[in-house]
Length: 193
Image 1 (cartoon, one colour):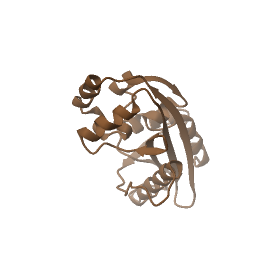
Image 2 (cartoon, rainbow, N blue to C red):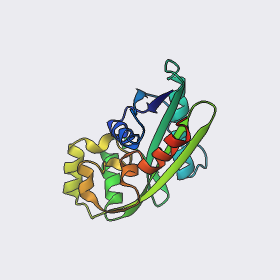
Image 3 (cartoon, rainbow, N blue to C red):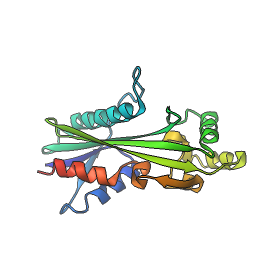
Image 4 (cartoon, helix red, strand yellow):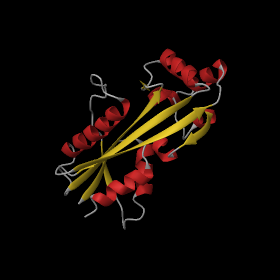
């Protein structure tokens, strides 16, 4: 049996290493699935993030046939403000607009994690409320100049410089980073044998 993470995110890799610490000699391989991450029809944010996690796990399974009995984990994280999904920014103007909207507001970060071995697929989700302080236009411009926001949902990363804007969180910090540790451990236990 081989655990596989369907992601090349260094943050998810590090979190999966943490989640597996109770399993003796826990190791995993990495694959990089490429799926269409656009919303479909009248999909709600939670349905959307769960579908993406499942599709990443399933796409990862197709890329893992060289491994012995692969069990593949996929995950996705979205930022939701007033029911609207804020994806990765398209450009500087988009990142600026997102950060201005998040300034002084509380938003939700939804992370779903799925695991599949081809016969069975399980999914868990984690919703965390994140409250931002007020952010000045100058601070937004300085943050965007670091390039950190440009590949992140909602245009920020809580685990790095973006954490400077987070007044409080209610929920799972690791889920906001990209992989909810409790839910991931539960899924690993489901397919551990």
